[in-house]
Length: 176
Image (cartoon, rainbow, N blue to C red; front, side, top):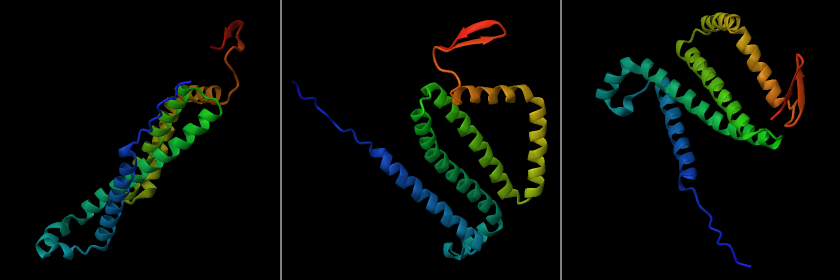
């Protein structure tokens, strides 16, 4: 018997990427606290006078960075859990990838709406606008939404397996 040469490949970017992300996130959070306090005197009087009129704009920019970095962190951690669960219950790689892509887009859209509500601070009008837009889209896209829901039930409900014979309106199909 020949011995196999087993080499362990280390990912030098994996650990450092997490540390860098955490460091940047903490810097953004610290910047948000400083802007909320409104005391920029530590920069010097000249720079503080220049930046004081722009505190609101800087605060909104930091809010956007915070929400987007938290969203990225949430998506990366939950996608791993969802992927492992779907693979454990026997879903194909193609279906898992497609589901995770749809999940990714939905979470980013939600993050954008949360960002707008934090920036504009008028949650009532934002919720009303989202409701009206959602109603219009639901009415206009009724059939595609029903098709999408049906697809998710078929793919992830495990109703049919490979090799099953299905009859639809007299036509016989075999699941591949």
